[in-house]
Amino acid sequence: MEPVLNRYQRAKIRIREKKSQWKGFFYNAGDLVAFMGRFFKEVWRPPYEVREVLYQCYLVGYKSTFLIGLTGFIMGVVLTIQTRPSMAAFGAISLIPGMVSVSVIREIGPVITAIICAGKVGSRMGAELGSMRVTEQIDAMEVSAINPYRYLVVTRVLATTLMVPLLAIFADAIALLGGYIAMNIHDATTVHHFFIVAMAHLEFIDIFPAIVKTFFFGFVVGIIGCYKGYNASRGTESVGIAANSAVVAASLGVFIIDLIAAQITDLL
Image (spheres, rainbow, N blue to C red):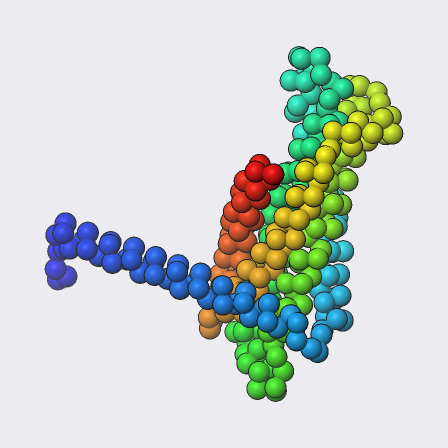
């Protein structure tokens, strides 16, 4: 029979497990920083994989436009419908376009776009590179004197860094269109008047930080998705683990960057 552990022994085992978890967390964080540092070194070295970057931009950008557009439209419609009763109670219905534009462009549009890309693009990169690692395709590229990091990682990270800002701008525009349609359910207004009022409430401090942080969102989604897949362990189940952990870590990274960006914007 197995010996019965007393309370003190069980507590020691729990402490040891927590220490190993924290140790593994810091090890992974250090590996991710080194992975990022390698990206900044490889991105400037020729030859440049321009064709692969364009292909990845096509996969990240064009293949995501319908989902991003649909989400942005629903976001604008729901935001307008939900806030209209409160604005009507204060007689401020004319301020709805400005409220929608500031809310969407400054915060909701970039974050929701990045989260969708983390789920759609980050998981695809994690699963794709993870399967290549498991089937030893990456090892074969290294043996063939091909730099797999430059071809597989740099191209994908560049694609997400460039395309997520464009997708966020596209989502903002569709969200404003959805807000206009939702506003016309109760209050008749023209497209020209709606967008004039919406743009009148926007300032440089609303637009510029929102666009800048989307570049960081795209970089985080790409680098974490590639890191999880590129460093997947052996075994088929590691592909699913890489895809799942890529989504979770990238989403958390997006929220952390958004928190930092909000603090910096508040200081400006």
